[in-house]
Length: 290
Image 1: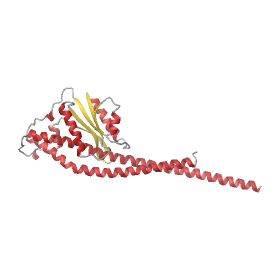
Image 2 (image 1 turned 90 degrees about the vertical axis):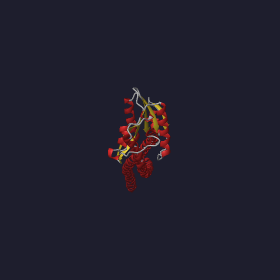
Image 3 (image 1 turned 135 degrees about the horizontal axis):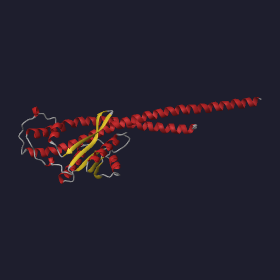
Image 4 (image 1 turned 45 degrees about the horizontal axis):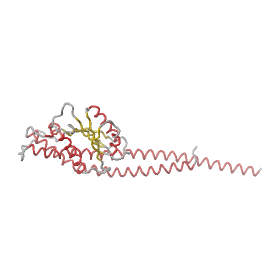
């Protein structure tokens, strides 16, 4: 049976761990609220862009654009993987990596573009080619970050480095339901964009596009791609904080249970020691009397 000193040391270590998990829980809660507010603020802007592109495609007929390039027989596919820069978030990253591995098995020539340090450390030892890695030090993504990634992706796509682009991130359906999501970004699809923008026939407005509908579309397309990437990064950030909150809550409960169990064990050992000392005193007193 462990002695009192060992039990005290173990209890002190668990109390220190409990302080850390509770602090991380509070930090994640604050970040989650801030991330949700940011996501709600930028959502109407990018939905408006999607709807405008849907209006162009639905109301103006066919649009010729380099963003609609046809996929060859053996396409080279780029996968943008959005992970976290830190761990201690339960199965948040593992679920994304599982989705990426599943997608890579169905593609002929997958190339990875990684966002997050955890994803880079994981895929560094995989057989897949890593084209680029972006890291933003676990902070809330900004539009400039999405702009940097979007510019890189668009340039590589137009140069023919790859022929199609997917993005995999974590979508938060609710605080307890975090599901990896897969979205194809490039090449653009008229049907997919009209559906994303929620464009119905009754909503179509006949605009005059100056200098041309192609020029307007090519101006909006990079904004749309940036919006998709930023939305995925923001959604992943919010999901990460929710997953970390759940992980820290579970860790705190486990620490409290361990602390309670050790406290009971400590009390028993201490009581046994006191009982042994009292017995020795009584035995010694009886021996002296004899």
